Length: 228
Image (cartoon, rainbow, N blue to C red):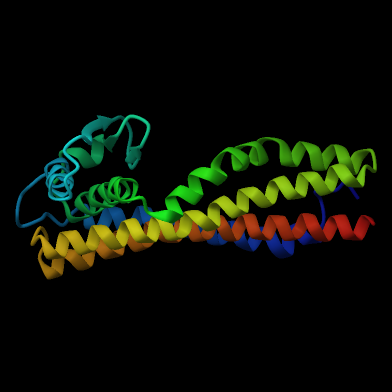
């Protein structure tokens, strides 16, 4: 049986993929729901982002726009928060929550938050692993070169490690966002509940991605042992 057509894929990977698809659906539906709930303060997500940055002394961090929907991110290389077209000028609870989350990432870098340093250290190896691991494993299986298979599996494990380290980074950014929105009086308690749900749904996509990689890694290890 060709190496990637096996019952391990059905038993391990397919359920994880289904969970990941559900997580993606959940974040999209939750965002759409709370994108209809307007903040009573009537301030845009970009304005709120600037306020959070200034409050934390991050006057050097710029806020710019970026094309697309939910393509929001903080770029530490240029020290810029980029808010998507659907978020930047919006006054909804959903958009403000997303923008505050990205501001949370900027604060993490500014304060030297350790998990984000660890994630950056793992990132180069994880990028190599995501590119080379599967081809190396395939070649190793094809030519019965077990050391090559083992090396490929080790590289793939770095991808999982990166995703696991990403979890506390994302959860912490959301925690910082909710705390700032609450303490700064930016959102009311009712509006804050909506922002929490949006960020909670988004966080679950990272959990689902890590679960999928863990299932794939376990599958590869079991296939390797079976071939031995």
